[in-house]
Image: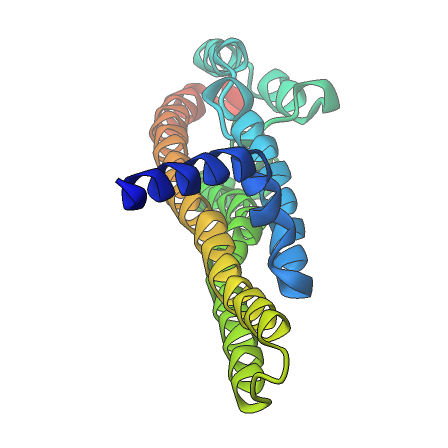
Length: 237
């Protein structure tokens, strides 16, 4: 009965201290823990930016895709190029299509290079998206390493405390517990940051690949229409 009462009291104490648990996980990791927290804030900012940026409506706006298709289909290649290069219409899709149309209309060998020009522009635009996403991937890779560094730091502190002996038992156990807490909290923080970052990074890369594939398919349609327009006469007239 006494043991049961003691267990209940311990549980009550744990619940009373529960309000500070989250704060402890944020602030209890020492300097390395604060670095991980800062990285998590940076990661959240980049994730929000990329979820807003990597959307079909942002990279391949349906109205602009339709407008370019209609202009190319009726042979208005100059109009399609002008539409693609207007700053107000700037987007991933039109930068790719515009590069091909510009090569076709401005180069004497454009008819043979339009497809390669679009492929090069598509690869460059996709690489730009990958480079900005690399911040998320890098944080996902670095966070657990920082957590491991904090673990090592905490364990070193714990062993130093053990080595110093127990002249004052209360202080001894407090220092030992504090160092072990740093070791565990930084590991926890690193994993909490890394797991979502790695998962979201993979999702965003797959999303970019899917949308770039759609752009490539649409570009092939544009190339086919441009070639038909070219056979009708110079400039598609």
